[in-house]
Image (tube, rainbow, N blue to C red; front, side, top):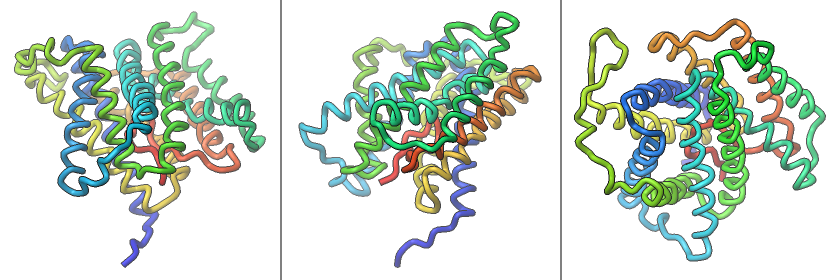
Length: 321
């Protein structure tokens, strides 16, 4: 029996995925504050997610794990640029500025995508692209509070977030190509495998002391302390695997572009979580600027004549088959 599309369920799944990613931002900040380097945290997240996804496919549908030698170069670039570097740069950014602001910068990826397909691919784009670009740039000026010399924003953090947006745009564009021959789940699985292999070279796992995972760290909830390993487990499971399956499930109920528009609530969720949990307070100008940027992103999502299949900025499966 064919599956019946239920848009209401699609909205709920996408919002749930955004909530998990938002919580993961704060949990990741706590792990970074505990002394885990961005490279190591990214390596643990990618490796953990890759192991679980490969194991799940090996049990459910092992044939889908088959790849050819011709696919390896593409999967390597896709995993390294789209997954490994995007996540690493995101961690660098949230380690230096509020997580909600970092996400606002990173989520400008759809604007870069629309510009790329217009300038490079010569695809037809709707006139709303210019409104999207103007709104995004204006909003970022407000977020950065440039009249105050950048306000509290760290230059390296801003740079990392913007480069992350470019890497994320590459992820989406490469994903369009890869999804022609592979389904979203297997494509995402191999992208995480490629990212895990990359980090095993850059930050070898055998140089990591697993003993640090038993160290208890404060989690900013009264005097509560948890083993660092608990935070890392959340980053892998609650910050990657669970929202991945939620977002993939949502794509069977409505269009990817719709999912992308709904997913723009993630910076809002992330800011609320960071405010309640870590007391990260944004200024009125930053909040206003963030809303302006999100409006621009929403326009950019629909600027292409053929909508780009994007969902969540951190989603490891933002690809429609």
